[in-house]
Image (cartoon, rainbow, N blue to C red; front, side):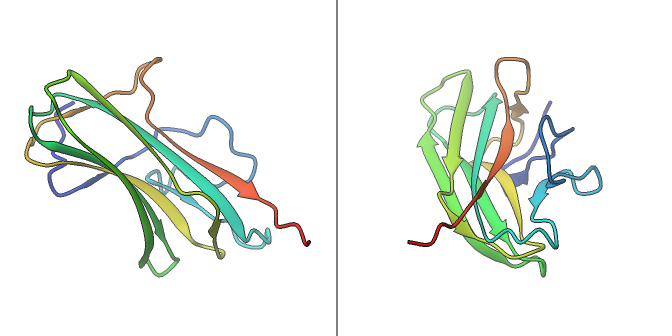
Length: 140
């Protein structure tokens, strides 16, 4: 319901639908974290957000943020568009291959330029999600 995303709102996720290596945790529901000791060095991350209730002629952005275990943002990927008065806004963002270390994490942030009361959509059709795919490096 009414959410203020003017200063940036990091999405909180209720659960993980498929998580073989415990990237998501109920103790840190806003992030996917690279677990220690699994030897992961490269991942690709995709995030998607659906919101409604924005103001016409304002900007809406979805930001995928890669941070290290010291909570320092390392990289950002972003999609942004001008709201033309649509009821529901949907944006996806993808990182491509990213080098990671144990404890690095990814969050999904939404920003609405000026509307302090937007609704995050999360029904069976309009999904908000954050997904991580482990990449294997193959010597050539």
